[in-house]
Length: 299
Image 1 (cartoon, rainbow, N blue to C red):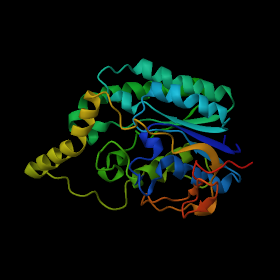
Image 2: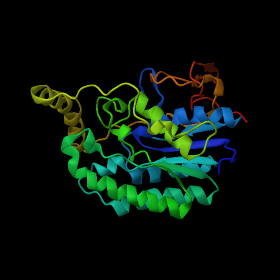
Image 3: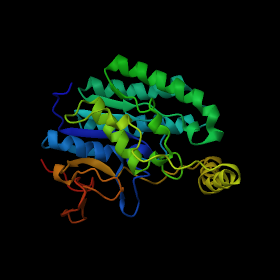
């Protein structure tokens, strides 16, 4: 449906859609959904965008916490990406998780929204100890594809290309995309939506050769450092029943404008198009192309 006119884009999901790995909490998170909004803006004047995603959320939490606010915004375009956090839980049920994602597909498409999603890569390509998760990823992807077909949802097959396994596409924690990875996800979804000027170049290998993979003691040292820096804290949160998203709210809960002139192809993760909504209602334009969800909504 390349001729659709998108005026209200709403993103639902977890940390990947929130933008973790592309910027930080001090300078602001960008992420693939922000980048997609910037790609859409030149072709859809008047586009407004909301991002309801919160890190750490399971598919059921995305359904329970984000679907109703998303429907209230009456999007004509929505992205739903959820389920990765479920994959990493001991009691994973692919049918249950996919059913929750499908409930979001059904509700949003029934209201008239064009919906897009992505498939998930096998994390074992970057985290060897996660090899048992591979079968779960395959099962969840298969069910998401089937659900998408039933509801006319666009699927960006981001899991199917070798470039996804390039370490440069991932942040140091190996669970979240790097700025470059977020840019590729945005390009994949834009291509799946047939946005003018997009193509399959997002599937191509990076132009520079991959850095040499450490072997022997260097590899072992790197794995120990990764485990201490990321796996340990993640495991500790699970044992305490905590989540990285505890106490967090959506970064952009209201539909606010996307400034097409702020978009470019930088991949450094800096705040990129957000007009920062101040407490007094003023809006400060920053070099980012988007308007911060705290800004007052104007019609």
